[in-house]
Image 1 (cartoon, rainbow, N blue to C red):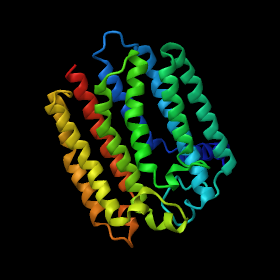
Image 2: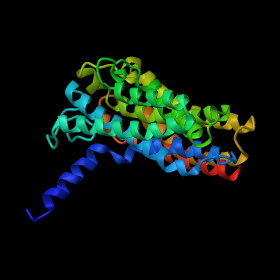
Image 3: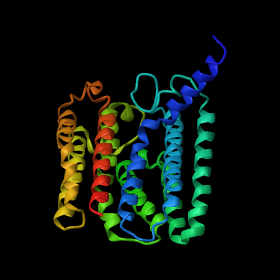
Length: 303
């Protein structure tokens, strides 16, 4: 092996386990909160890089803790589709992944102390809720994912919590608009998780865990996916009609063909062929990204 090849290989494995392609799910809520804050004259834009860093670090921590406990629980194993595949393939020590998750949570907490100093106890409450949610999503003894609570938990943490948190850190104020605008974002994040769990119903059942999809059953889980995606558009249209969102926000409707394609894939996938929707979670993440970018742009245009 040429000099340096081993270190590059190790770095690529760590990048794989961090799953950076998923981080748009935490960047988009921050961007929407920031775009809404653009209408506030006293917004502290120097804090925006720290807000993004905190959202990315808590997301990375949650990914790593999820990797560890899914592997230990037997959810991620050879032949399954979930996770980064690093631990089932023996490419990293599980304890090293767990420690990396703790380090990312610690980094989040350090950044959060800056926000608490500037904005007081409300951001402390939001931060503790976000860290606890990211940890106990799969960590014992709560393990919300394994008790069928993953979808509503992700909806709240990566929808309202992140949008409201970003807006509050930047402005020091709270607006109902931040909560309302976060709802379609939360719906699409929950749809990403639903797509993942819909694909993995058989594997998760075999591992003895109950996700929202496995509790609902395949047919109702497919309907949940369609409802989550469609609700994002219906909520957005309603907010435009109520003049909470600017007319520019109808630009988001440009993504409808992609949404329809994803819904069709989810609804028609045979139960014995999960490979047909192996990448539906990634396709839904791409939809969430496009939706979020257009929503953010529309907020800036309508400022």
